[in-house]
Amino acid sequence: MEILAILEALEDAIEKSITLPFSNKSLVDKEELLELIKEIRLKLPDDIKQAKWVKEERQRILLEAQKEANNIIAEAENKIAALVDEHEITKRAYDQANEIISNAQKSAREIRLGAREYADSILDKVEAILRDAHEVIQANRKELK
Image (tube, rainbow, N blue to C red; front, side, top):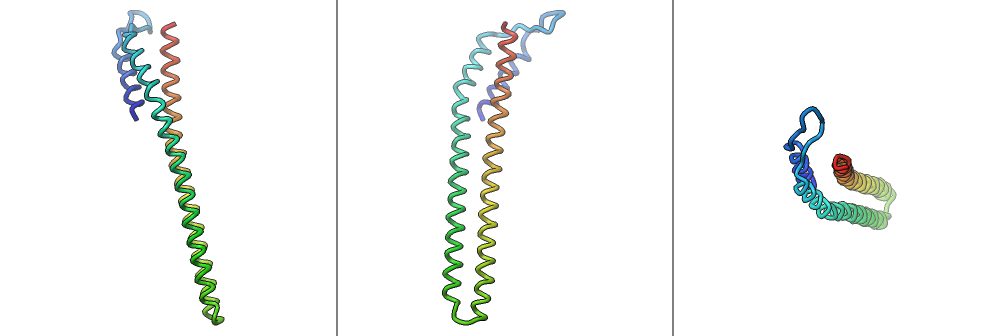
């Protein structure tokens, strides 16, 4: 993400600043810092768009997984209807159908969980970036005051 690179540049600018003797204060290039903050403001919507895309992609994956599970269940039901002829064949068909349904539900559950974890991971990263950016901005504003 470009925000991280900009934040690193902001951090470098602060670290390279001249420290005033006998204090914790530093002299920074105001224009450079303001330009970096401006870049953050411009790039932030892109990161938010990316998080929104992740959320939409997650939803698409979940719907696709549900559709696939429904198809597998429909296939299993069709197999069951075709194998109703004899008792032993019917018993095996029920067993296989239950196993297919169980596997389909398990697969759908795993896909849903994976998609949720992925989306949560991306949103967590975006949240951390936003939090860090907010803290840096607050610290800079505090220093400017």
